[in-house]
Image (cartoon, rainbow, N blue to C red; front, side, top):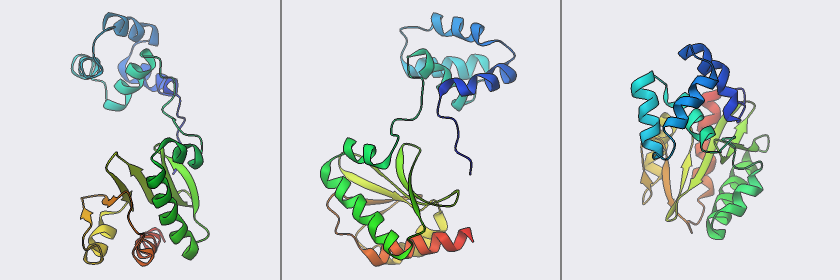
Length: 184
């Protein structure tokens, strides 16, 4: 899986090609929408001009001054941005997995710390104020591991963990092993 250019303007050639107008035209459209809320700007582009969500988001966010979708350059910069307890828990989850699978690389993908095998994602983590989410990038892995996740909130694509979760090393290692097996 190739890493995409996080700059918003990297989408501009595709926008020009797909919607048949130069970017100067789209900047004029956005100037008319200045002061409107993000959802209104997105809806205008999607409903009136047939923009995909990705293209609309790139244009809206660029027009609002956000030139890049990349917020964190490194996992450590991500960990500095979150609650210290959450950072400790996520680091412990990744450490437990890397103890069994040392070839995995910790990277930032979709602005979240993610363990990667080659170009494939094995397990990622994200946070909200109240909990941590882990994502094995496979619904089949979640279904297979669900019997071992007693007391955890299991969602369609993620597992919700308390911020102070005592890491079940066997569980997260089994999740990683199952995901790696899918990739081979």
